[in-house]
Image (cartoon, rainbow, N blue to C red; front, side, top):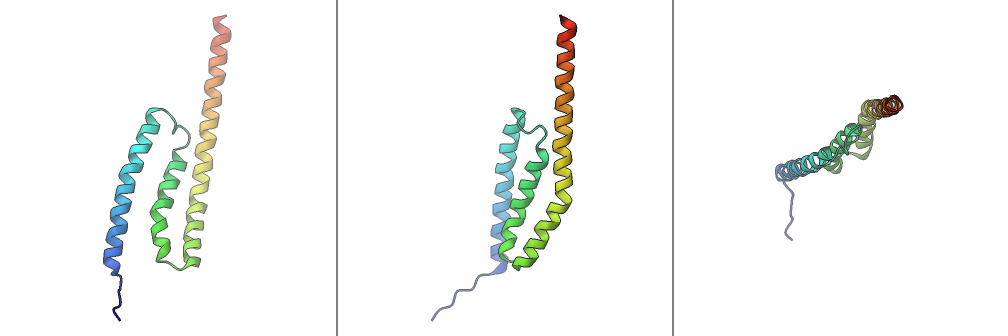
Length: 108
């Protein structure tokens, strides 16, 4: 019986190629979203998604418990940045709205 063995080097080369393609496509999507100002205040979520997609293929080669530890580590370091980024956006947006209301009152 013939046995087929997968070569880790070939698998890694394919993963890196797919991640490279993902990076190009994701960059194009983010660029389109930026042009429409859809990313304001949410760039940290976009980065977190990209990091998650980068880590995902390696979950197939790593013991499940290690994958969980790695994802929790990224969540622990990334969550404060994500929450801080969203909070800063909300505060800046409120400030802009307050300034617009003040300008409208002065214009009357």
